[in-house]
Image: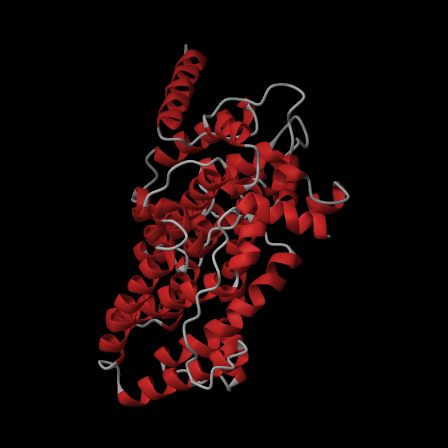
Length: 411
């Protein structure tokens, strides 16, 4: 009877976990292990409440490696050592996304693919791509925190967290770029939650699965473990997910000659700099300072103008590569003759807001930021003679498909 009662408890817990999306993605044994673990945690234990238990688990779990459990198994399990790697891996992933222990790495002669399922892992390519953004962030945003970009201590004190975060975002962005140019039917099929027909399995399945579940969860686990995750940072991650979804939707619509809305386009261009806002909010958290909403509002307008400027500079490349670009979208919505006029109106409106907010900044900060803008404009190849450059809308490409075809022929 006792065994039956335990089985019933376990089954009820499994159903409860499923209803809350807390189910292991590996196998049934892993789910049963997690169910029994949760049952153990909720049982009374002296005066400990649930919050104290959770804090204790998250604090101590990085110390509980496979080798630790193997030694404990020898002492307390009469059946001898068991395969503890899978259990500790699932346990660690569910708490903080920790890396597997060096012991299990050596035994397997390298990390298994499944070990990385719920971890925040970045590659060298993503780190290299993130470098220019990090440099610009330090030079443009540190001044809003009273920090001197020219002091190495200011950079290296916070660089590991900022670099890891931006590299992770770049890695996800690269996957999203690949998804943008996948066949529409294949993407829609996978996003529906159905399995790919046999013979069509590829990296695509895993790639899309990341974006229809929670692409930032591994990174948020790490930030939360270090007490760096805030509601506003979580909201910016949600903005990032929304931007990537809009990018896929809009670029697919352009390729497939479908209608797009100006509301979607403007929403996307405003969301596009979410990574800068994440880094900025992280820097406030790292320094233990309250977020300055006036500075955030000013920088948001500045980010919009920079994104539009970058889109104009990269217009032809974005057409060739089918990337999100505000001018591309406006040409589809308003036509080739009206698109530049409409875009100029949005730019003028944003510049008015920018100047109004700029005048509210502390005079020294305002002067420093204007100097930085002049530096960035000069480094970007400004030849207009004006210190902040002038707006130049490139000739629009009316027939994108023909343009891509001609480009490929010329190559």
